[in-house]
Length: 477
Image (cartoon, rainbow, N blue to C red):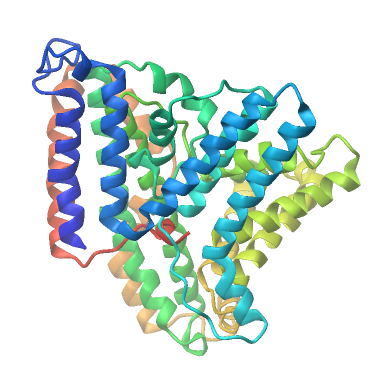
């Protein structure tokens, strides 16, 4: 697995870019090596991406390439039919409903069959979850829905539509890219050295988040997750939970940064997926900053169609409950994810009814502590899939066992500096300082940036070689 990671960074990605652009780069424009007109066209670049997307996906799971092709074909054909019958709203609506049901049935079969069987006392059949199916199913569904709503144009090119669905930078774990957001970029996109270099920088930042921050703090969570809850001290339980909170943030936001960076290298601009969620002053604000693409997807395709806030407060609260129950289930085929979604539904309903008004009146430091505490408790529900273990862990957090243990002090000494770095990195502090330095010493920053990017890449490579492989947490969703 370590070899696969290194192969992707140093072999596959350069090969993709070489075929996409041709080398060398010239002036401030990226100029292709060949003068053959077709090889320089957007058509060739889409065909090239369509091919390498499937090579990338087949690298991990070749047997599920057919499944993805079926998903692409299903939604592509649905788009053609909806466009054909758009003047007959009843027929177009029926086509859309059938298409949505088929998409959800495919997702449910692979993701929830074993959960349903075991819930009713049966034996799990062991259906493997195709990598990225939760993400690309939502992406493909967005196209026929938006087409029916009149929010995008029909896409007649199967290659362009397939390129949108299988675009390898964000294929496995998002962000969830909607067709209407990049439709124009499939037809025309600009590639410049400035954009390419910005993409490289963003990719390496994501790599640093994953390899140097998430993986290292994840070791602490893995240790505490294995400790019997009866042996957990208060300090140890909180250290473990804080470790997971940092791990999942830097793991997932790191992947999103890498996706945005890779997309930018290829001329695409993806919407941001994270905006410093741990500085939020309410749970409502947290979900405007965390996994933004998923939150907006459920808002636009579930919450608003259910009536949103247009049918009175009672109906709005019901809609919030439905959306967050579905959000929980989307994350995994385990009951703890459903309860996690319900947990957030309750918090968001309470904030909607009265808590937000109270939070706006108190000092920001207290509203941030309130948010961080509830988010951390939510991560306990998210991370501990065995519901028989969860009560013991929560009890340990609030003093069921000893206050401090030798192991907790040991881990605190070892990870103290790391926790400070993680805290600063999870807030805008370092970004703001870098921006100020760039204003004060632009030449210094201009010359230092490439060296720092190269150094970071070397350190990440050394870390990958030295440690065991640790896949992105959201690969399993």
